[in-house]
Image 1: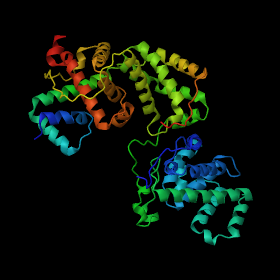
Image 2: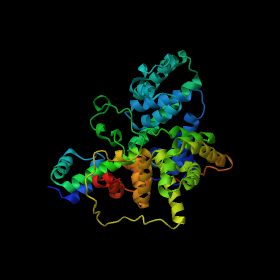
Image 3: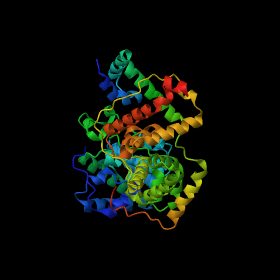
Image 4: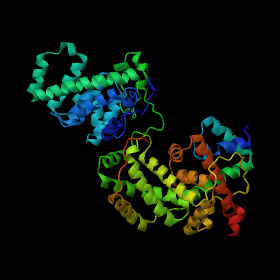
Length: 88
Length: 395
């Protein structure tokens, strides 16, 4: 039987649905009898749902085009590609 | 792994010529950098025979290269040149068909005859006669074109042989793997070159690759498309670091300018968008460091101990308006230490894959996962007072 510590170390993979079926079974077995981890898993899952659906940190439409223009103006006014001698 | 170590080595002009024509330095040439003079000679031959305008069209020559490589059971060059042909306007499906059997590739009768000739020169060169050359003339090829065809076959044979001798892995995932039972003798079937798997960081289908090549070839205006397409992602990454819309707008311009200037160094090892986000992150972090407010980017070893273990209702968000939720999330995310905030934002707001986010932040995959998890757990802690059954019912 896995511990709460083991469960938390795998929690990220569980949230990303990136666990092998064998490990998933162990994690689910742990959840079935550990209320603390059950709450932790459920509330973290809901946190992610809220974050992804909140529309936070949006790129405001009105600033998008002016920014494209500013960038391209700066490039046209003399910004040059560097020599490719040094690889990235 | 290749049989000999890959290296960048000297020969900047040669590397530059390769990047200009392929958009990257193909591994086959990296693998030969112990003798940069010989790489330069091969590249010069490629430029004279294949890249420059000649008696045959570029596409005809590329098709000869595909046909000869297929005849040699070589997966490396078809993978590389299918990509090149795509940029020349040839659909991948047609290139694949040329590799499998050019007779079904919807080519003109003359081009079919040309590729028949190329294939015969490889497989039955010793029995070739003047009749074969005459049949090409009957298909309206002149002698200069026939000479180019023969030289293209020879050049492809050389390249195929070098690649097989060095065991170079494909730059792009091969779209056509020759069925071992048909074309590979048992021993050759185990050759590394035929393995379809590539390292995870190698991406063959970067949707921005073509634009990047155009910009590098001097079409500056094409960069505008990249700014428009990726502005949102760059802005959000910067907003997550800087916390100020005004500063994020300034930093966005700097990030795109840096990306433009450094474009010749982009080698296609990751997607362009991942590379760009990495530049944006570095730009943002430099600004934060100049404010001397940055928290440590070192890993924390102390174990995370969750608090606030109270159940949440099924849909805790229903207690708040969308606007309230947006502000709440932004406020609480901005309270996270920058290292966790960035990892969380790239994965959960930008929805980059774990691998892409790791590359963007210069972390290992386990390192990235650890930061994302810590960020998620810390955010959960700070949101619990708003969304736990006790907290939400109070609001």
